[in-house]
Amino acid sequence: LKERTMRFWLDGLEVFFPYPHIYPEQYAYMLSLKRSLDAKGPCVLEMPSGTGKTVSLLSLITSYQLAHPEIGKLIYCSRTVGEIDKVVEELRKVIKYRNSELASDKNNSPLYVP
Image 1: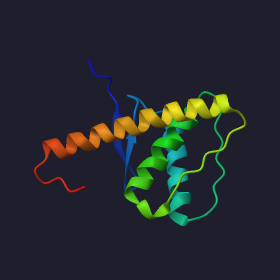
Image 2: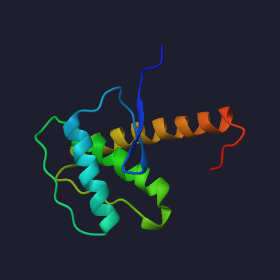
Image 3: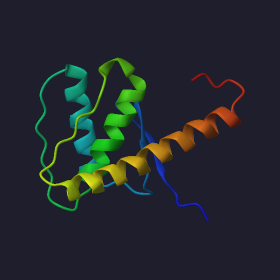
């Protein structure tokens, strides 16, 4: 049985979110981050521990990079290697979900354009 996941539009951007539910705080976080990226300006966002900041950030940024390849790399900084390991694991999950969705689009639509 395949775990349900979410694919949705946020302010004109298709976002690939590898979990079946998104909290209102995560949606608001992603919307603020997207608007900062659109404005090419700085962004400071804060959410309490355990609210899904990492997956929200990675889902939004990787979706934004897909739509805007000219923006370049994501640089993620953390205090410890252990924290980075968790981020890399989450990033793999986000990318795997996105790639499976895009492959499904390609296989199911005769009008698919990458």
